[in-house]
Image 1 (tube, rainbow, N blue to C red):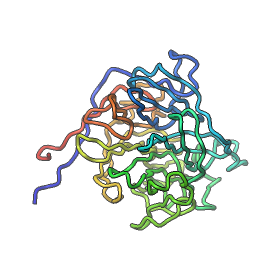
Image 2 (image 1 turned 120 degrees about the vertical axis):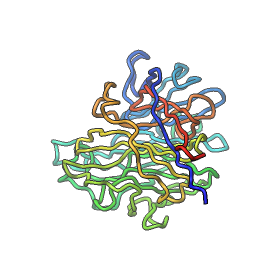
Image 3 (image 1 turned 90 degrees about the vertical axis):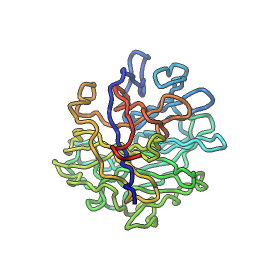
Image 4 (image 1 turned 45 degrees about the vertical axis):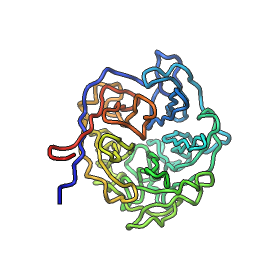
Length: 349
């Protein structure tokens, strides 16, 4: 039997491009890009969402030409704490669905030395291409009573967030690749899914993967991490992958997951990693993450040790952050100085 082809990815230099970011006062004064930036097309217009505590919507005809629109996104409700829209998906009927990372207030009121919260994930829907959103409710949360207010972590006492959502090739399910921060035996990168027909009433219809089955409730259920934390997130010397972004790559016909790796409780970036998978329904099928950029290679940007949020962004229609060809742009915290070249190891096909 011939060996299974082994997909590869190589980082190659590219002319710099920078997203405008959230709350930018002017095009030449970019704001922050504090999570994955989802993209979608409408006709010949590319729409992009940058978030940093609140989302902003951009539009243009290419990733380096996004001057057609720049506006603050509006929600039809309020929640405790800030929101970051980290993923979107446009249905066949044109409706746009999104999912946000929320950091509620008051999780550890006695810890003034830390910015502690415990994130959760909510769902939203838009009928105007992402300018305004109807909140559909929370869909993913950590098991109850698992927050650690004695944590050495600077940001999180627990929770689930820093995620992406991607459909399978048949558009039967929407898969959530998430970062989990509690409890200790469930920390790392985990996976959940929701049937596409449930997208308008998602609360209670997202199911986490646990012990080989999709039967743990999204709100409060347990997970089996795909990539468990090597050292507990609540220790000062934490060591864990987090912040997955995923796309289907047409060059290698695989799903590709990009990951951050934190090496302490202050989230210092050790490097950016890539993993491949042929079938989202088989969480054990992801390859061992391989580092593609070390911290010194990304320190040239202003984010330095906090150069998080790697993602691809295709440059031509219909490519986005979840669909890309052989050499998409690699962005890290909204900045790109690289492309990713996909192929196969010698002897593969």
